[in-house]
Image (cartoon, one colour):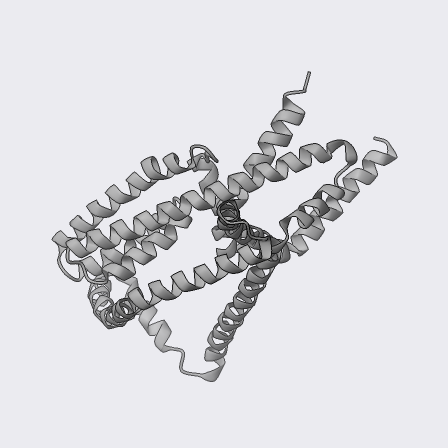
Length: 333
């Protein structure tokens, strides 16, 4: 191996270590790119209809989002707050029922005696440290979200300058391909976001309406949770089903079966009909690839990695198709 190859290998190792040390910064930056693309979709649509410059169009989109959010908040927030209060009242009932079931498990009394053993300050200190660590993590996540939103607005305000910056640091012979690659990534990510938004909204409305027809308590809250977790395919819809099932368990076993059937129909309809139809022209992710990406990034980066796993896979799939397949594999003789 010559000296140039050794230097190239060392440079890749250094870049990998640097990327790992800056993983949270890169995660915030990628989240900002996803939000910027989400803003760019309505901005582009608005500029096609009305001759506006980009800053004014961004301002109009942000004001429209605030107005729509405020209107939906005034419409749904009172009922949602009431259902959250009802949920807090139902929690002791759930715990009481679970306590009666737990009394039949042999190791539960031993666990209870161990928990009652936290009667000294020395034993409570680790628990207090964990609580403080959780509070610090929540504050850190809030700051990261604010930085992500600010970066997204700056990126959406002038995306061409940032695109030219990425193209400028690319070797000259590959700059046309880089421009096409950035365009493909933006199109795929925008299509994925638009399709998932429509899918999540449909799941929210159908779940809310179905649970209301079944007269299940907390229908709005359950529908909202199911709709939001649609953005985390494979894992999210399954986890979201636990809330309406737990509430239906307090009503009757027959109601649990009805809710389970409703969620299975909606979940499978969304996964196998609605989402593939919406994403057929933009991106087609294999379920195994999506699940492995969620598990891997969730294990490495926690909840933020789990939430951004699918957008990252969408971008990586476009990069693999344009770079690895077309530029390397197809030309390999």
